[in-house]
Image 1 (tube, one colour):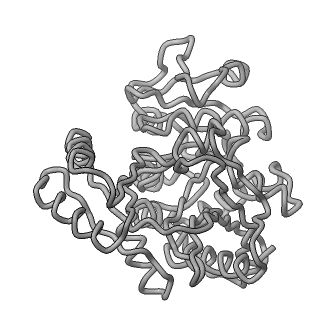
Image 2 (cartoon, rainbow, N blue to C red):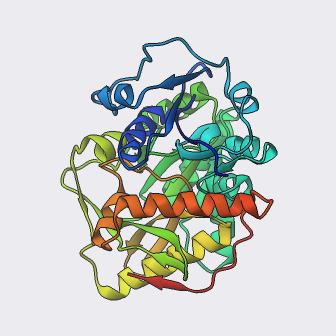
Length: 360
């Protein structure tokens, strides 16, 4: 007999606000789930659906539960379960998406939506994902890794990269939702370079410095259907001001237009979908994923793959599902069915073998 459905959201990550917004979208499509809010301090609160939905401006304000935490930490909460529960993961970033959480769930034989720990780990590490992408013939931009403990080496690497490319983008090797995104150009003075390095040093996390490619930004979702993998209609990110596609642009709608389906040539759409399917399979993703690309004169370039992409009203997957004529409820039901099926196979690492793939 199937156990209770638990919607898990929040998390001790920089993307917890996005997670709350995703949970608000998802909970409307679920039948009486338990709502577990994983707080920034690690504690787990059980919220009523009404309290989750009543939280306003989720992208800008933190959710503060009205009741005390039910569990001191998530591991304690998981250990209190019967083992028959099913988790819908409405989480993003950090330990929620880098394979750590998935490993905890797998160790306890608990069913959950989304990719397993191995795929999550490899996709979340942008360096690792890029290596795998290149091995499968996907185009990637030139990049270097910046270690926050080696400021002199980082500066030299940035200077050499800027000699070859007029503009570069800095982003955390392991993070999402455009958190920590920075841009540098060859026209910046030395103070700008030093400031960027100092900021990275203070954050104490590894960054990727990638050649900025001038072109059209695209993102392509992939979902798992009964007949195999399916690439969804592609979305285009069009900046309407001289700005980057950062958190404010993505979730607050500042200086950006999101166009679904993308207004690009059919052959570009087809190639973007093909690359998204390759990325999903090469990383071993399960259920759904979203791959970001940028198109220059030679075609699409692979940037990264998200294993738990946002499901907020402002997110791309819901936009692409709508463009494909797929109801959000149908998508969510499919993810839950896949999670149950994976659990019944006595493994929580996806042994996925695509029966085929299609684009729409």
